[in-house]
Image 1 (spheres, rainbow over the protein chains, first blue to last red):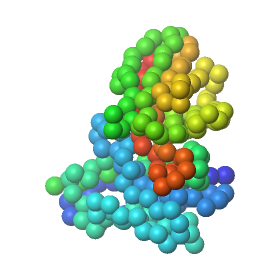
Image 2: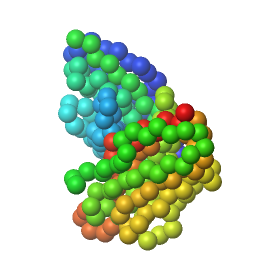
Image 3: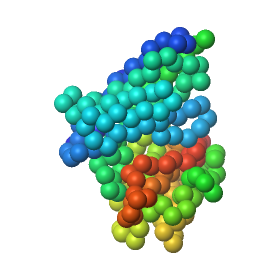
Image 4: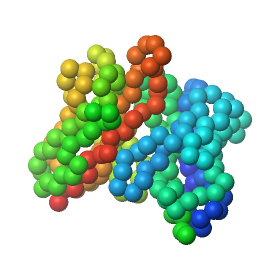
Length: 112
Length: 118
């Protein structure tokens, strides 16, 4: 089947610390991979995506590389800010018309 | 509007009552999805509409749940005889799965409707 497993939280970091949130997937085809972010009181927003192996998605200082050999799409940021505090969801899509398969979300709190 | 909108933003109802949740997708988007986000859980797929095709209802948890999409645009999710376990945030998303350069499998989400069943 298709599924996404992501690192359980909550994660608490000090400002300017390095962030990694692990995400691995199982898929029956060739998925596109996504990270969505949900800030407090807001809806899900696309953070970044990658559509094929070895692609790197990046946005707002966050990066994730599509690793087919390890079926992973780990989210990283070199220096987190208080404003990055949110819940992060890893997701996969199998392409045209398919639902997204989401991980359970990882809550990140960044303290000054 | 520019994004996906949902109404109401909050709904409190009594057990056993019916509720209707509305979603307005991004104009021109061909696909529309409903998800449910329960406290401490990930997103659970409910139903998917694409153009004039029959909807994919494989995620609906029971026959108390139904959805329709009128005119290929606005969608309504109906929950009949609500139960306390239906309490969750219901999210709608849309994407453009038509031909041409606008195609994208990225889903754009609305702010959600928080449903509380007392």
